[in-house]
Each structure stands twice: as C-alpha cells, then as structure tokens.
Amino acid sequence: MVRVEKVSPDGPLGPSRVAPGDRLLRINGVAMRDLLDVRFAAADDQLRMDLERPDGSRFAVEVDKHPDDDLGLVFEPMPIRSCNNKCDFCFVFQQPKKTLRRDLYIMDDDYRYSFLYGSFITLTNVDEEDIRRIEEQRLSPLYISVHATDDGIRQEFLRSANPMPIVPLLTRLARAGIQMHTQVVLIPDFNDGKILDRTIRELRSLYPQVQSLAVVPVGLTRWRTDLPSVRRIDRRYARSQVNYLRQRGKRIRAELGCEFLYVADEFFVLAGLPFPRAPYYDDFSQVENGIGMARLMLDHVQREQSRLPERLEEPLTLWWVIGVSAATFLIDRVIDPLRTVGNLSIEPVVVTNRFYGDTVTVSGLLTGADIRDALLERGVRDGAVLLPPNCLNDEGLFLDDLSPADLEAALGVRVLPTQYEFMPRLRSWLLSPRRLHRVA
Image (cartoon, helix red, strand yellow):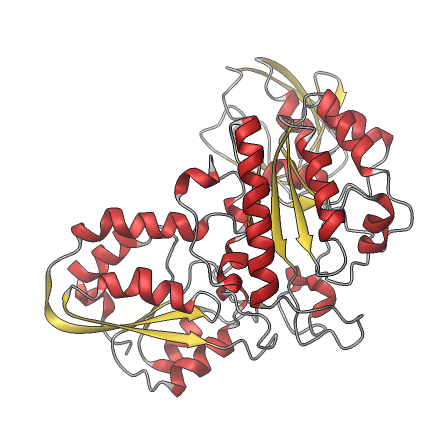
C-alpha cells in the first residue's frame, strides 16, 4: 500500500473524498505495492479504489476518468532500494563521514527509480519477481551500469557476492522489449583493453534494445585512504581511449546508423581534444550522464549570442564560477564570445576542489565553502556571481548544505544559479540590472 501525502482540490478525488494520511490499498482489486503499481493501475478509465483511514477504517471510491487524466494525488516517496555492492570507486566510499548532505550517503540501486528518473543501477539486487515485474509492466528504458560483460571482472569490479550473469540478464530483458541505456566506468588496467572491447561487442549485439553505451572516466577523491590504489587517468591515457572509442563508434555507426558508443565530455577535457559536433550524440540520450552537455552549451551560446544587448547603460562585472576541468573550454568558447557586450566585464573564477582534492575537477562536485573561499580570495565585492548549473540540488543547496543566500551574506553581492541553456536568463539580467544590485 501507499500513503497519500497531498490532495489537489481540483482533482477527481478532492479532499471531500480522500485526505492526506489515507492509505491506498487496491485499485480494481489489485494490491498497490508502490507508486509504480499506482501509475499503471490508474491508467484505466474506470477505477475502484480501496483505501484505509489513519484510524484503520476502510472505504472505497469510484472514479470515471480519461486514461491520461491525473488523480490529483501526491503519494509519499518510495523507500529506495539500497546497493549491496562495495565498489572501490563508489563515490559514497570516497567521502568524509557525516559532513555532507544526508542524501549523498544513500547507495541507491533501485530499478524503479531507474525507470522513473534515469538513475543508473547494477541489477545485482533483483530477483526473479523483480525481473518478471520489469517485463510485465514494461519498465523501459532502464539505465544500467555494466562496467564489464566478463562476469569475473564485473564481480571483482562491484565486489558483489554473486551477481547474475549480466549478458543473459540483459538478453532476457531485450527479448521482453525492454530498452536499456548502459555505461562503463573505465578504470585503467582493469576493465579497459580486451575487456572493454568484449563489453562493447556484446552490448552492441543487443541493439536496438540496448540503445547506447557511455564510457566515463573513474572519479577519485582524496578520501580514498582505506581503499585500494587506482591509477589516475592522465592526458595520454585519456587521449588513447578517446581515439580508440571514436574509431569503434564510427565503425558501429556504419553498421547501425547511429554512434551507439559515446564518450563522456570529461574524457575529451582530460585528453585536451575538441568536443564532437551535435550529430555525434544522436538524440543526446545520455546527456544527464555527462555525454554531450558541453556541445549543447556551445551550440546554445552560438544561437543566442546575437540576442544580447550591444552595450549596457552602466558597467557591470559578472564573476563566473567554473571548475578546473572545463576552465579552458568555458573561457575560450563560452565566456570570451560574451565579452563583446559593451560595459560588461566577465571574470572567470576557477575553483580548485579543496574538499574532495585536486583530482576532482568538475564543477558539479564543488562545495559552497570552496566556492565562497575562492570568491573571497579574488576580492569579489561588486557585480554578481554566476554559479555552475549543476552544483545545487533540487532544494537549492550545495553539497555541504550551504545555499546561495549563505554566499551572498559572506560576499555582499548577488549569487545567481544558472542552467545549461542560460542565455535567456542572462539576457534578462543584463536588461534589468536592478535585479543584480548589491545585497544590503
């Protein structure tokens, strides 16, 4: 059963019929285990819903609705199924204990959330009942961390007790019509070389149900004191892997008509190589995994640049916070083109990650304290600060629970979050400079 958290007064089940705290037991006689069951059962046009009040009394309501109409009910979140692996590269194990947001210590590995929100899972904690449910409810697409199709290497990689053989499992899901996006976190001298070649070959054989394979570099922090040593990815290694993967991808495109095999933006940065053009990414199916974000931003700036004002009425300085890995790319390809606006000064602030260590160079893992300290060291006292688009969670908090308001209090200037398609908002700020006035 699932518990009702909120009821829309305009929905078909207004407060007079269902109230917060009521528990939904069944729809049309089918027991509701979680939100997925509700989502699928509620697609019918005639519903009988059996519910239970907080005092234990039970009642039923009937609803006639269009299959696409919403019930107007918000349910409590599903408990997240945790991961049972102990990967040496897991970011949860590479963090200090109990100093960051609580959600950063959740080891999620839940196929339901993969379907709903696109989170990556390993499928090492599913049983036969789960697999049948995926098949019956057509939970597609799923996002799956494969890492290696060699089961011995994969087991060592995940440090899992006895994972199901991955290729037979993916083959079964493919035969059931489940679409999948996969990824490999690449660790030098472990799952590269012949192991990676086999992984690419076996996953490509499951196309079109396995629709994509992303290869991303392993991330290492300074908190690995009790974990095995892992070789850091340097420029030479990154360049060799990018070249190899691009060649494999071109051959696959000639066969399938799509790239299938995509290289993470961070690999191109580490290799010092330019990002591919937009057609390389096809439908950008793994953009949230860092595959094509840079290209989308570049093309966005190029499209929107001509819509910026030619000159501001008064001088304005924008302090643009960026991570180390993307500094050259952002300065040369994003910030410099915007410096054509008269009276506008854009100052990049490259922030070193002191919290996780200098091996972590992406802006999405910068803490509020590191950003604040870097801005104070630059002597920021006027203008406004632009934050990277991926350094805040949905509640507007940095990794260390600081907020933009905390930074504003420390700096005395406006601190503004941005998005990947940031140009319309930037134009609005530049045309309404009062919104950027100094914080009192």
